[in-house]
Amino acid sequence: MKFIFTLIFFSIVLSPSASFSFEGKGCAGDCASCHTLTKDEASKILKIEISEVKTAPVKGLWEVEGVQNGNKVRVHIDFGKKYVVLINRFIPIDDIGKPPPIRKIDLNLIPLTDALVIGNSLARNRVIVFTDPDCPYCRKFHAEMKETIKKNKDIAFYIKLYPLVNVHPESYEKSKTILCKNSLKLLDDAIEGKKLPKADCDTKAVDENIRLTEQLGINVTPSIILPDGRLIPGFIDGPTLLQMMEAKQ
Image (tube, rainbow, N blue to C red; front, side, top):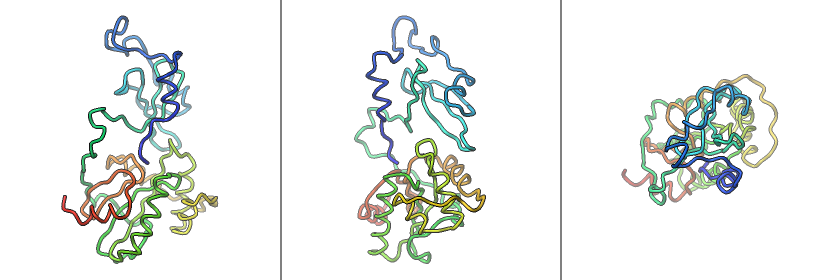
């Protein structure tokens, strides 16, 4: 899911009561010299196990990593300890308007045994997609995949379920339900917002997918990996996908 600044973030920036520290008297450029946040404090605030607390790239925020329901999460807490800020990543201003750098993923690192396949599994071109059942951009790309295979029979999409549990907390159980049945129909139902039954198995595939994304440095849904390993973070439409597949890197 393409990252967005949430309303809560803007409320922090604009609110006169929010506690931020900037360059100047008191902090002398090092905000952490005036403000502290221990792991115990962060744990009490977030009610999860905390693994690391450090200053964020943006002043006035702590970057906190922890574990929730067995999954790694990252959030930000303002120095005043009044707000939790849900930001996936920070983008330098100089990078705004520039296309993201294209990087390649080693396809050998991605097992496809638990992947759901949209299209002909014997197709020559395999596109791997990390998707979240509750991600609105994944919903849009889901429709694009179905339209693409109608026009090009030599492409198959291999779907790896990657729930962003810190953004969509219900998607984890939905992903388990889908993978227990290995069911495209259940994935379609989830994408359409229908209620799914509870998982009837204790699959570890969802947790393995989450660990895999950490290993690969993937933190956006959808994340699309072309047959040559090029990674496209975020939504693109079907025609653009085909153009990128046809173009040489």
